[in-house]
Length: 437
Image (cartoon, rainbow, N blue to C red):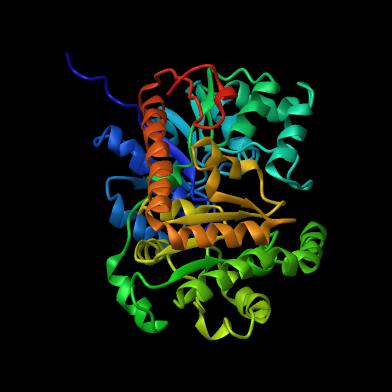
């Protein structure tokens, strides 16, 4: 008996190219789909795919088509290539993202005019943050407290009509279930980045030479503001909201960086090895020079290197693979590091969405530290533990990645074949569903 043919997939993803985490979403999920069916017909419909990122996509996944274009206000594709993909695709998929509402209009047009299925793969739906902020535990209380009628009709429609919604964190899943979303399947499904593992080995030696390093003798540290300065990054006029966020950054950057400073100091003093500050987002090199470097103790500064450029995803992955640890205030660098079994920590700021719960959901609660009171002590203890027992932390990093990949394979089967999504029992959150993986 022949195997059923997989569906033709149109993936809406690649949200921006100023963030290597967002860059990794698309090749990660597409790789997961191709692992299930190497002959799958896949088309990427990117929002923002720069030249460097497109070269990477075509190099890694030459069988994946890439189409450009948008939809008019009445739902008509603006380019022939998008019109062809729109017509031939059998399922429209929303890639991993922190907000499912940004593309609602596109998914509404698809649902209302084509009659073909659509779904969401590894997404977060956070109803309170931003503008509210808090610990993951606090945000969970807020999100699950909201009454079922909180989600408005327009936002609800594309979710209710979805064939599948895979939430990458259990808080989003509980929230959408609490809102009584009627999607055919509403389950846990990891961020697509977990399947991304390509490392451009040719970039490693030039990187080491640039910063006077030796492989396996340094750790990487990734800084972050509470709110990424998108207006400045994209050369746009600031809006009142971006001005508000800049003001919050000005008041919190020093206190937020304290845990990362402690992590760097702990690393240097206990190993006498370099600490390398690297970016996940394009603004980070200048931010590190201006705000992180002055906070470092005088005895630590000579051991710290700052990468003064925004690197590619493939280079970042390669460098992480030859580092001893990756300590990050950004959410996706630890995921990229986990593909190489590198010890890693995520220092979560209170303005980040509930996506950070994904680490605990995958069995990696030790990998996340909440930035706030007591974070410096916890960071010092965690970095000391990584130095003292790197094998344990490497194993934990690898295990989280393996669990995520296993669930991603199931998610990919649902996308390709329309198979019902089975429940998933999170390793440390058994109340997520009553089922098992």
